[in-house]
Length: 451
Ligand SMILES: Cc1ncc(COP(=O)(O)O)c(C=O)c1O
Image (tube, rainbow, N blue to C red; front, top):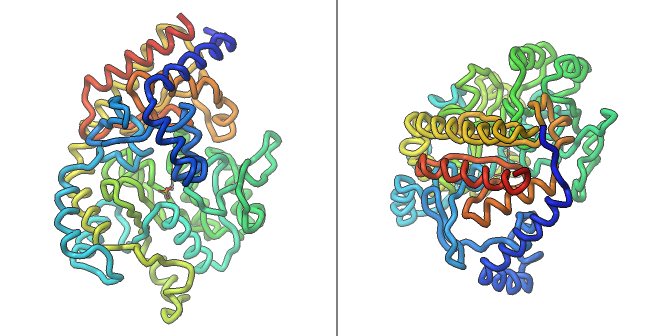
């Protein structure tokens, strides 16, 4: 198998950085100006980590493409890391947004639409009761509170190198010896996550049983397939064991479908017949308008009601003035009805198969120690020869420099990949030609490194 020449990579990266600066003078100017009013020159500090030496400033986005302030055009395979999996500004959602903004945006009162959305969520995800939030982070925070309140147990359990948004309890990882500790750069934690959380490797049934058998875990918070440290599929039978053991030890199972909604209209849960106690989801469900949902079983609903004093519900730690606002709900209704449809998934998954086959072909042609994994409408290449079984194995294979090079090489040729890992999504507007173009650019990047 081919090995990477690190000094060649270093000099190629320098060349790509020069090309990036040359082709983005207006973005650079805006960045310099932004640094005077925005911390780091960006709306969120992590945005300085994009592959260029400053971020691309967007002019306009529509469907699968966007243009920047310098007039460069891009194929967007990042799609807001799932937030724009619907394509940018989908027409069906836009039409309803235009109508709704004339009729009121936020009231802290329900509109008729919300009932239709609740009924659609029941059909789509198989859980009877639903609530709304603005972000998947909040949806996860709220269900963790519910689970702790009902069970009276103090702890939650998560998987090593998971990501569920900025949820305090989840910022804990295992070191190389398997010892848990605060995740690197866990910023100003309220309490040490050791106090709140147990962390184990995904796909390790024995560790799961040991952790749950103490009967102090209120809930397992899990992506059904890990997606934030590459795509890590569950071993055959793992979900059965997860469900069986959580039931055995009185622990709730929360399935976070925020990324795995790439699997199909009802997420991985419906595609694989999972039976969670709670389901959370955010990002693309309102076509890019902030919105999130969390659903739960009849049993949860009754147990929660039994513990809740409704007089204090507004200041009890589960809330949000803007949650369930009329605009989010109207956008969600249209997005579910017209955009995230069976037909969309059929078409997108076929294109994603084409994407994976293209990347796989290049990996084989050059005998690279890399893999490409797919989950529904989501593909990702990873710089190791075999699929990782868990987050620890996947994290050990991260190559920041190579990652940066592959991103920047693509960006300079008009393709935006999802940052910090090499992930691609297909929107309703992505075409076969777009996918072929990615294969061509990916091959050129490989030729530059190994040719
Ligand atoms: C699985 C998962 N859950 C929740 C979130 C949080 O989403 P948001 O940042 O929109 O709150 C993310 C974000 O990437 C995620 O990947």
